[in-house]
Amino acid sequence: MDIQGCTFLLTGSNRGIGHAIASRLAREPVRLLAGVRDLDRYRPPEPHGRLRAEVRPVRIDLSSRAAIDASCEELGDELGRIDVLINNAGAFAGGTLDEIEPDAIYETVQVNLAGLIHLTRRVLPGMLERRHGKVVNQASVISHLEFPGTSVYAASKAGVATFTHCLRRELQGTGVTTLELITGGFDTEMLRGAAGALEPYTDSSGWDWRDPAEWADQIVDAIRADKDTLEPGGKSRLGLLAAKAPRQVLDLFARRGFQRG
Image (cartoon, rainbow, N blue to C red; front, side, top):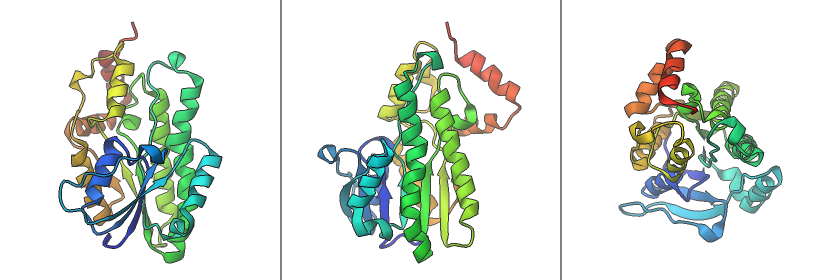
């Protein structure tokens, strides 16, 4: 996919992997709608080189159906001009299920899955009309590993993966494609929060703590190559391979890595 001159909508651009993606795209000759929930807290990208993109912060609030519709209305005509939608924004609820507050369960599923699907539904008609576009969805290696203490988050990300595969098949022949990001461990605020939530049960020192900028580079390359899946490297790659083994292998891995007390 030739991205020159394309309009990107990136959700969750303020921090973590989202900010790394925004900073990477800022070096490209594109238009970037940098989606954030609160415009007052907007954090501009840091391109580490010459700024080539036209960057505009926009409010994208995935917290409810009404908030998503309002965000799309605020985009105005831009909604129909989006060439690449990167559904990156996410929420995490960690710990054993009996400890997680119901509000956190609903927030995680809303932001990670329901909101992602709803926003895609609003953006897709413009892509289909122009027969050009790409939907990039942030899934996770944890949905394959099914590690205890991440049940709500893993379920929401497994839903993202399944949605992406179904959508890819629906869109065959339309000129619109999808990309599933099977994201591994990167040193972000969310991963540090996950480590804190799981601290009573597991040792996170052996996790992947890679630079998000590495993943951002790979994401842009995968969009250019029009890939439909981007798999992780490092230890996360080994975890993804282990997930393809018989379930008993993952059960043994979980018993060794997670102690309820």
